[in-house]
Length: 347
Image (cartoon, rainbow, N blue to C red; front, top):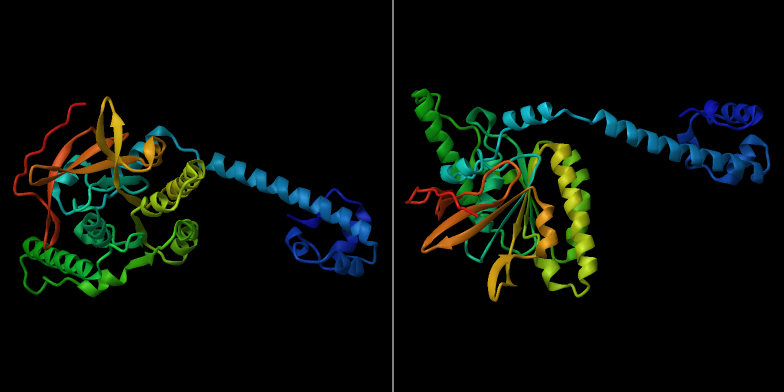
């Protein structure tokens, strides 16, 4: 915005330009006394000029936001085409990938919850590794942010899963090309580990601060394609008595994560704990943080035991039907269960 377009007197405009103040940004850091000295006018006149400048900046900000919203409009066809052409992050379990439509989707927030020991952290680490699978192997070739609120991230386990992923890529390469000279994977396990950015969070205020910092961090570190919070729940269950405040803070954090997913075309995965809920005369297990939190994610996946077998169930999704699939936690990471039968759960 140029000073020449400000609604002030012509003499004041001329003095501003002559003194080198040709744009509104040039007036943002100057003090009233310094400006009065440069323009050789009274401080009262300077305060009137700065009042007009402040009002103009506010109007320009509103107009820029309006233009951004209008320019960001898409047709439903464009959105459908984007969804059909997007690449998902594989879970390394083909049965689970199948009911998810290929894996964990970018531009969406996916909540994954379940009882302790069901494999939530294992799945989180698996996704942090799998997001790095190169495009030549059907992956995104991206990087991961892992936000650990419970201290459950195991670097040795991440290394083990990364090594297994590199071996799987080598095997795939061998089958595809059938040429021993071509069977080289230029992504050793260490490279996988280098591309997982880890944040250890010890309080809910730290958690909010890191979420607020994510946009700047992602701008500085290109190719981030997944943000994992393990777990979203921990500090908000331990340190809160004011439930209204907790709901406001969680809602604000959820909105920021949704915007990040859309803006940077990345996946946000929120791992959640379970709690008990009294319903129709009995206590039932349900995901933590209450009913209002259920709207914070695009997709909701519940992990549960069926006998001695682990299952994943799609509890909520705008684009996928409710279905369940078995999976296993092995020494190599998340894999297909020995039993590969899938079933649709009727609600």
